[in-house]
Length: 335
Image 1 (cartoon, rainbow, N blue to C red):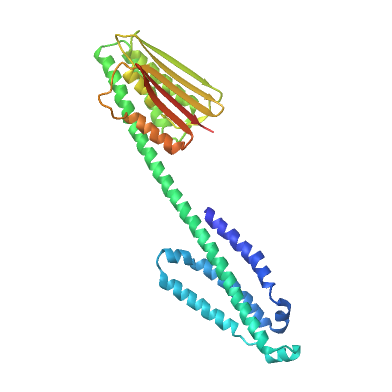
Image 2 (image 1 turned 90 degrees about the vertical axis):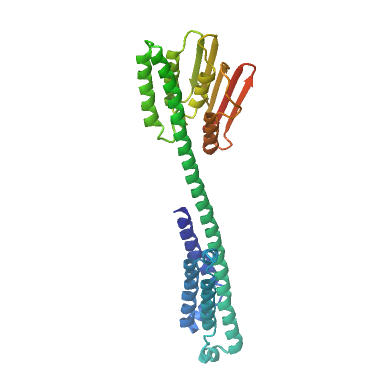
């Protein structure tokens, strides 16, 4: 995982760069010559101390409320550090170098505790940072799974909504024994094929979605008479621009549901333009039927929630009613 690789890079930086530089602050040459065993023990202890902290992960233990383990670990490390700091300097070395034994022993003790504090501070800082980073990633993964589940729910809601509206149209053709019924069922089968092959994908080329909407418009046209005029305009400078499947059909459905009449002249306008990485989608229809109540349309609210999850702060959706005209305008920054 990403945070694991970051931890490895930090370990390499500390062990190969930072710690050697810190060790050079003490008289390494003299300690190596006059007290080799102590110097090697100190170096091994410092590295062991660092990896003990990294392995134990004290911030994680504290978050899990394992306070007794934290106290026990710190106590053991303090005891080991104290023991190493009390390793005596051989008297013969002091005699050979004419140095004060007490002063040198005190300096060595301070050096050991200095290494302990530096390694402890650095290790805990790193572990705290890594733990916070891990928590952030975990929250992001949970949020992503939540969004994925919500999108799946919204998609599941779209299909029954579409099927209900379309089956109503087919039912009307059957009742009137229209000679367009056979063509309508062919169109319907093509649309069903699209739904169960394309909607399982996260995104599809805009040309596929346009073709799907065109087939839906053709299907609806079969049940309409000369009083309903359909103006369907498309223009794109990138046919392979990616969009979520069935993100536009809800607005087209509403236009046909509320904007058609078999007795009064009316017009439905559908416009899809893709230019410079931006999608512009507009519909306009004469209001021929009123909704039964003032609650928002399920399909539109469904679509708005999908857009909020897929394009946060990258889309604009407005629906307005001007006189007897209902207008929808949607813009999405695709790239």
